[in-house]
Image 1 (cartoon, rainbow, N blue to C red):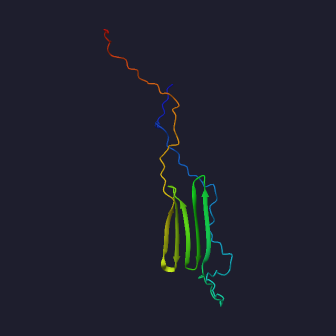
Image 2: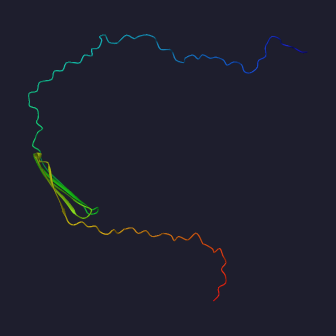
Image 3: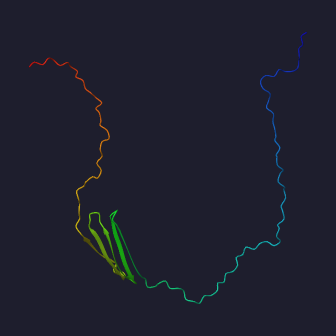
Length: 163
């Protein structure tokens, strides 16, 4: 028995993809305007400012400056030796500072400032500059004895030696 089905076209390939329309998983937001919880509209006018009158005199910052300080550092391990001393009374300032220089001299600066006269300094040096001959303190010793990596061999044969 042979049967033929007529009227149904044959399908080739894949069927068309289905179209899905997902539904939201959350309820939509309500569409209403809530009424305000306050009755009067707020007023944003700044409060008027009326400071209390002050009749005491303002403080004066033009005081007569007066001070005296000094410090000194002497560290034999590092060789640092320096210091400073200064005295001020109003517009009159006097002081001195010193430093030990690497060449062995002591540089001392004595200065004065009196009003608008500017900075007047006198620089003096004590001692004589010493420049000792350089002596390296590190002498590395070889930790291995290098062996030659090339031993040449003669390319000729020596001939007989006649005496």
